[in-house]
Figure (tube, rainbow, N blue to C red):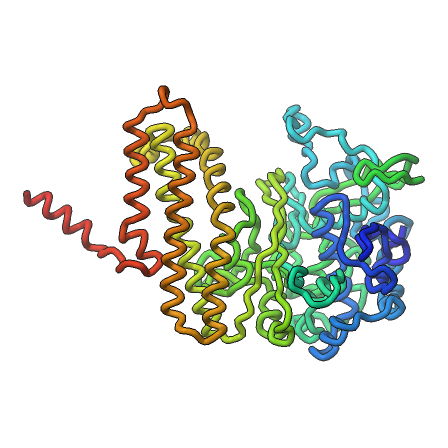
Length: 557
């Protein structure tokens, strides 16, 4: 199977039908392609990155004029084929030569693994040995078609988690957060096209190659599987200072060789009946160890303002709610950096496309070491403010909204419910051991999930209202105050409503009425306090010396 010449990418077309296409058929005008349609959401995310990487590597525009021309007038499939067809030898999935995303050594000796182990959520060797595959059972996927195998292979190499000694993580660590700029189809004046959403995420050639340390720009340095595998038995590293920028899209941290001893049947992933199904692959540890890279499609953070080490963002338990909006959309503090493609779009392209609205498609795995806890994805609104001062005002306002919501849930609501349910005050929680605190996590996670989801729509409403005022040149201070007052009302209402729903859900005769009343009153008092309101600029900040003065008065008395 060849990934340039054979149809393998599942897509949905304008008439609603699905089919598999070759990469160059992205821009076909007869029943155009409008979306990816893989059998798994993580495959869709991986395929989007595959296609963006392909376009970035061999079709990068020379200037903004060419980029905009191709955005509105996509190149014909024949034009794309001229770029892609010469790469066919590099994208062979099987055969005796170099294989796509696989180890260069044709005689690589390693461990034979079932094909399902390519799937990130599949139980690992340790889990199977301890018979601990309770929720995701082994043996559910026994045979996979070549197309789904290619998707699984690319997904694993792109998201590779830690997996035992020498099993290297992806270039961005296990399950990185990816943010892509896409059109908001609800407001877009043109017909939806997958091509446009992909092309929005392609950098100019000069930007892409700005830090290229190599003198060459050809397939031999783009694709790691075309040359002897760079291994890491002695902790050798592959850095951005000694590799081509395209490697960010094509990194191969895992040493893998697919076994093409196939059988006939139905694919356990997509359900398609085919002549060839793969059952096994060979794996070896100590593949390439990628260090000190910044991927154009991911946001990063540093631990301290002056640090030179930038760490990829990763989804965390609770999902990609509006807490992530600033990390994905705005550069608002020294220790966080949005994805390069998002920054380039805001600084150079959004003003060219002012008639349209855009979203950041954010997705990734929540990983706990080698265990995939969840796949998350969402669409975050991108607000058009080309003026840097106005963008900073919006960032400050959004931070106030998010910080106040965080305090409402973590400090007031969650504390009140713990008191109501268990009689656990903050002082008592501090005395709990680690195991006892861990038992509270599921309760905290549930409260978080409900609170953040119920306040998400109002958050964006207030954010857009403030942004509209900035855009229109209105008195932003007055609008900010009105929005902050409304946000405070929403947080207060939602917190008290959730307390009623969660804390008072049991039979009344079995409840501790005094404990419930005390918890409710404490919650209401906290939400109405000047300390909480000051987060939104609705009250002066508390005097940091007030507590010490009160303590001194008590001592004197």
